[in-house]
View 1: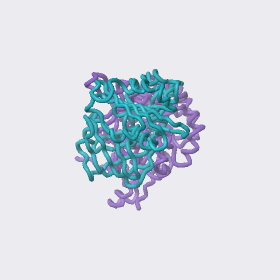
View 2: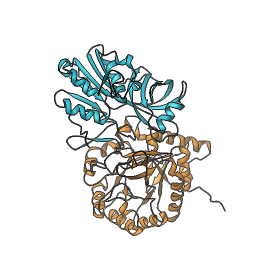
View 3: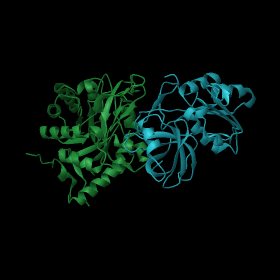
Length: 303
Length: 251
């Protein structure tokens, strides 16, 4: 029986598997299917200071091996989350509150509201689907550093994870910028900006025209980026991007991730996360790996 | 709501481009009229949300239109004995309180199929008046199930079968005589809008909506519709059935 526990910024997760923000709500719906306390943690739907209605529909499209989404941060607002969902969710597992602001100051305000109430904050500076706020702060390293610094200044106790966009010149540079700004960890990758066109109607499928690409098809790019980021910084890296099974999670951990987030696969298989957790344990046992944390960064590069 | 492995019993063409898939779940699943399932087609990241047409114990029938690569694979690649993952039952379904005596069901295109689950559930105890619209003769199917209704009018756009016109037109011709206590409907948006224009506010009416979905359980907020009060509702979890007067069909 392998030890699946991992340490993330001084907090022990019972295993490294976390449903990714935006695919899992606040956990209540999936809890009707399985006990979500088996999860290492839950990354919440992106929270903003005020409630947001999100984008028009269609908000989702599918292409070979990937999906595109443009939900646009629909959420009931951070205060509603704190009042209605937080206590329930925190009883079950570690809470990673994903937050987004429409200006830099707003990131600070949201962080201040959540400080000490959640296990981690995951700063969404990379949502590609919102015109104002989100990816605007996630592209240039100096902006990444600035928004990280603002958020960190508002936090007394809660560790800060900065979620990086892959739509950048250098993921290593942006990871270093987050570290300089005071991030306690980085998570990557968020979705790649893409487009899918309905050729009969000669229009993009998504009402938003463009959306974030996720799913199995992006995995090799995400693994490469996690490898590069983990070698660029000393803080922990959380890996994600197309993880569909335990072997995928192992691959990300070997690339340098100390925990993984699972997104699109929750749609393909609602039981994806518990299956990956069980599969991780089986894989470790079959490979003589006593502690899953021994896989972190275990890849040996050729030549 | 369970995630289960479905074994295909039958997957047959029943009309032009329309297939009926009957599968057996691992255990009996109670399914209410108007609920749906998310079917996993191998090789496709998103599940296909499809309304349940018939359900008896572990035996479930869904009908679908081939409308893209996913449903094409479903129609061509799945034969008796093959298995596929399915999540069900999902959504609220058509809610009938009990005191209604006369139920009018108004369906168009693939919207006919969830209404068959209503007819099967209530034909014994209620008077069902069915108004079903199809494009043409080649699209007409499931007549045996539809005929469980007290009265059935089939309408085709070109008049090649039944009466010429739409299901809503057929309903309105009978409306004064039948005096339905409630109307349950499913079909393309233009049909639902016509229904709202014709009977909105005159009699309780509930419509089942369709939208591209992500998770199917209410977590991802992909499949929202707009309510008349301006709020968003999740088609998969708060619906797919909504009060006709509470949902904005023009958004």
